[in-house]
Amino acid sequence: MAKKRKEKQNEGLLNVIAPVGIEFQANGFTLGDNLCKAYGIIKYPPEPDYGWLSRITNAPSTMISFTFTPNSGEIIESLNKNIRMLENEAASAKDHLKEQRSRKGADDGMKLLKQIDENGEIVGELAGTLIPLSTDKEMLKKIEQKTRGVCAMANCKIRPLSFMQKHALKHVAPFYIDDTLYQEVSNRVMPLRTFVGGFPFSSSGYNDNQGFYVGKDVQGGLVILDFWKRENDRTNSNIVIMGVPGTGKSASVKHISLSEYMMGTKLIFIDPESEYKDFCKNLGGTWINAGGSDKGRVNPLHIMPIPKNEEIEEADINNYYDIDDGNGLGDLALYLKHLEIFFSLYIPDLSTKEKAILKKTLIELYRDFDITWNIDATKIQAKDYPILSDLQTKLKEKAEELEKTRKESDTNPYADLVLYLEDAANGADASLWNGPTTLDADGQINVLDTFSLQTTSDNVKRAQYFLLQTWAWNVMSKDRSEKVLLICDESYLMIDPNVPQSLVFLRNVAKRDRKYEAGLIIISHSVVDFLDEKVKMYGQALLDTPCYKILFGTDGKNLEETDNLYNLTEAEKELLESKRRGHALFMIGSKRLHVNFEIPDYKWEYFGSAGGR
Image 1 (cartoon, one colour):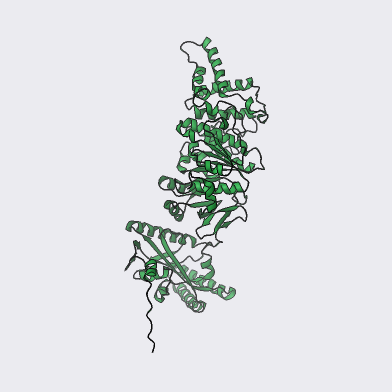
Image 2 (image 1 turned 135 degrees about the horizontal axis):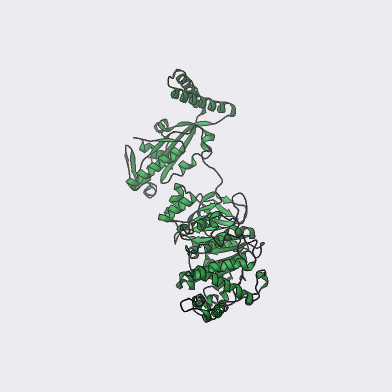
């Protein structure tokens, strides 16, 4: 007789699939480094809505398993007995509440029997198990409370599985082991249709059937998007991207921008960290030093079109930029309001009187250059506009005239304004602004590099960013048939709580760009920057308006504000708290996805070495 050979145990495989250690107690167990406690669902909602199980399956830090076992024959017999019992209880009940509950149970049973008999409804027994887990005892208690709360919101009732923790682990484990005792305790009658409808089933990924590859969802499905598609709640092409440094913002921006470039979209970057210089050069684009070079100058006195405000709110009445929609004013009148913002950003200490004198002097200066209220600014060349040294000269003349008649005790505001403008006209800031506008969007990709501005004062930076935004809007609104994306990196640098009108301008761009086949991408570290009480009215609108929101990892106060702003679920908050590189919560209209930005290797060759590595 042949001797049976003993099978050799694969120790390596066992070490991979088995936990480091496991120990069971009456009401919990230890799995490796994790403390766990198993619960069973003992009651389900009588009339559940579609997707009723989605809340439970998204419970954070919880292992979840559902098993459906078809068993129509035995269930029909059991239903008949249960209906008769409930009817008898209702007939003999002396308590009205007990009678009502018994009749409701009997009616639900009759309804289910009718579905089985007339519609061929498949019914079976459903067993649901939830195992919250954590490495910390206090944290485990909090997770248990959240799990119970989530189940209560779904109208489900759960209870701890005392002395059945091992059975529960078997039920949840991937190698599921059928356990008769556990089924007797946990199984509840359920139509298959109700169970299947409990999950918001949809095809994996997200596909517009046009556009380009963006990333993958958690199931590995492809996310294919056309950011210019207009349907339902997707009304614009604006994107807001938030996240702490190092989570993947720059890489995702370059990834999306490169795809848009290949689709023929014109790209304009405002780049304060020189992160897009190599990217631009590798694509044969136009890189411009907008921090003080002859080719990157924007003349503040060059009249450019201003985005008109569509919605005038009561709260905007005191805002001199918002009170007019622009339809009744000419180019010069609108731009003078815009210049007030520029000078308020550049010279924060200007008094109301000095602003009025400056405005009056500007009107006279424009008149000297034959630029009047009814002028069409599009017909004037850049070299024909006055520059800041002309303005300073005009103010000097006015100061000298006033000096002849001024009393010794009176001040000379014109002389003060001359001093305020000295740097801009002849000093350190003259290379930025004192000369005709030379900035031009020649190429399909244009990077306005403001890195050299980082050593200057905040007022210079904000004033220059404001001018660059204005120039970019000029390009975006010029041709309605050309797709143009303005990408504003480190957008917090464009926010000044003391001069909220700069943020109002950006908000109005976000509102109107859809009419010009243009889009705006706002990139920053924190939503908190946009929610300062002085600018919240406009900053929050700028975060709400975009139809596309990409939220990378964050924590602390910023996570709290993000939760308040976007009403995050527990699973979404857990995703952001994890701060996994390349992983983000992606909002596409009202649709929310956990997206992993898996970027093809060929794209990395274009990204360059600065940022996004």
